[in-house]
Image 1 (cartoon, helix red, strand yellow):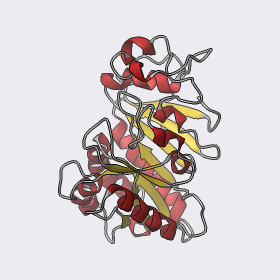
Image 2 (cartoon, rainbow, N blue to C red):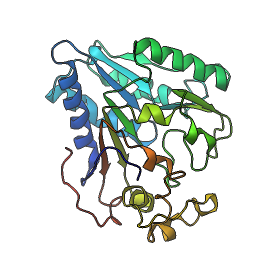
Image 3 (cartoon, rainbow, N blue to C red):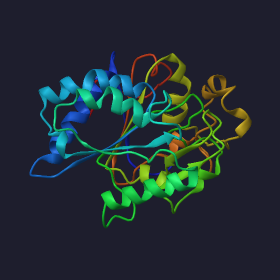
Image 4 (spheres, rainbow, N blue to C red):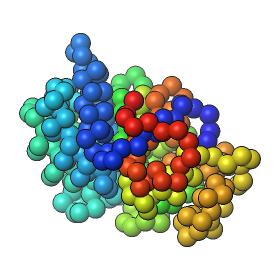
Length: 279
């Protein structure tokens, strides 16, 4: 892994309740004394986990959702009512279950072409984080794909080299739909805290590749991902190339907290010490 935050790994039988408490407690701390809580959300299985577990966690740890700012770490450029829309899924499922008044939601504008959608969302972020060259979220919740992608940052893609834009457009996503917008690595690495959440045996190989780097590193090759990832992860050869590692492995906030929240199946290949609670 590249230099950055120390990585802590939590393995739980059921990550949902612990993840929800982690979010609620960080929110309560952020809003104490009149502040706000800024949270970046990813889609996929996180929608169901948060919809099921975050509302009761907020009841147990009141954290004033009205003082939250919610944004989305990436978005597929489909209508909000489309099942692939991350913002649409949260607005339909999680937000109605939060105690009112609800949070401020910063969602991409629908109906724009990729470049225009990225520029528009970047402008919204800059307005929401005045005076910050790169928006610094209190917490980003991220997933990881079997190929090591996170947000809409894919292995070997030129967007991994983006250092100026805070939101980038992608029109050739290897995972459909092809047109998306995504936070860039500078935004992911500017967060005060980043939590990756992965569950299931299907994520075990990539989790090990991202968390346990090889010694010495062996260069990443596009032909190795994803077809032979499970076999090669046992040799830990993909992640360690500092120029082209897997995208998830490049998230190392230098001034923030980094943690991986896993179930037992996703953690099955790890050989490092892990925790049974979320720090």
